[in-house]
Amino acid sequence: MVPLSQPPLLLLQSSTPIISKEGCSLLSQYFDHLTNNNGGSGDAYQFDKTKMHMAQKLLCSIHDVIDKVTNCPRHDKEKQIPRYVRYDSTLIDGEERSSILDSKGFGDTLLPDGLHVDTNNGKLFRHISAILYLTDNQDGFSMDCGGDRRSNDNGTMLKDDIFVAGGGTTFPVAIPIGEKRMQECTNNVQDAAKSLLERDLQHTKGDVDENAASDGRILEKACLDAFHRDVAKDLNDRYRDCFSEAQPTVGVRVMPEAGKLIYFHNVDDGGMPDPNSFHGGEELISILAKQQQHDDINNMAGHQKSVSKTKTILVFFKEIPYTAFIDRDGFAELAEKSRSWTKEMYY
Figure 1: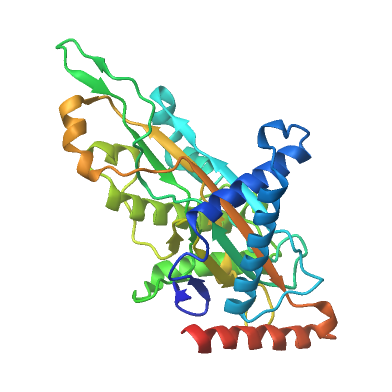
Figure 2: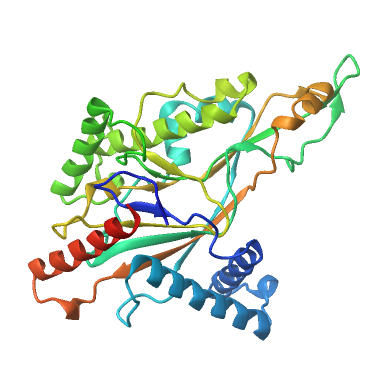
């Protein structure tokens, strides 16, 4: 596991995938099958017993890996089935493109669910979260855009081009490894995160104040700034009109790589929800760019890459069993012990 952020947030990523792309595909199909069967329309996702057994066996091996890298053996009080989340990209085209890409509209599109800490909804003993990415998602040009080639008035072939953006998991309070702390920017975002928790708000959508200076909006804006910062690296001049210029920002934005695992601690050394662990999962957005001439498309071939327009993840939670402590101090001691192990092992 490789650290992605400087303490106090302990955020790490596997240096290599822990399962193959074939395994990722199998698990995506398996959970799509379960999801659709629960909805009563599972005919399209029929799984034979062999595949079912393979997926369940693979899931057990993933649990074993997570137990090992976090030094937290699973127990019967933990949820054994991970949370499966699937994102399908939203296509932005025509007039919608100009309106939805304004700051407020784009924020609601990219982060419709806002940000949260994983101790929300009363899950106070949930001290570690792990996310396994099942798809490759990078900001870039989609080779499979489905656009139709056609001619302009001069007979030159044109083709629609699609830029797929989003899909990252962003920790706006985090300081990336190797980067200097930007004091003013860091303090502003960190203070907003602390203020939310002091008000017992573990989700930015719980802050109903739409003022840009409100705590929830400050955190969401920091996520957008991290997105703009990273996307600007992959865009040429034709696409810069789609996004704002990147602002000086902190934050770690993790892009999905199929088979890779990240994990992070949700509570601090005192056993309280860690404000540095606020994070948000980006939606995928497909932007239909201006029609391009055929020759221009060919010249850009070296800059294009195959980009998935679907994102799937599995989320695992590690909980300190309530039978292991008798009071808040006991829980804090166990949480601090787990954090110390992570720091000694990986930092």
